[in-house]
Image (cartoon, rainbow, N blue to C red; front, side, top):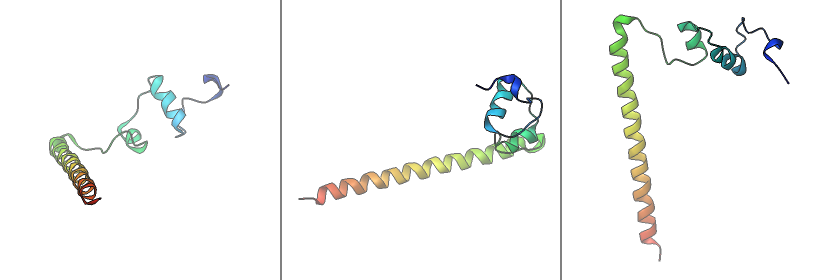
Length: 86
C-alpha cells in the first residue's frame, strides 16, 4: 500500500491521484495550474469577468435548451412510432 511518505508531494507531477492528494492536503494552486489541470474553464482579467461570465451563462443556457429540444423530438418520434404500430 502506498503512503504519503512514498511520494514527493511538494512537486506537481500531474497524475490525478497526485492532484487529489495536493487538494486534500490544502496546497494552494495558482490560476494557471488550476486551468492546466482542467479545474477552471478559463482565466480572465477582473475588467472582463462579468462580460465573460455572462457569455458563458448564455452558452450553458443554449446548450440546455438544445438538449431539451432534442429530448422533445425524441419523445414525439417515439409516440408517433407507437401510434403507427398495429
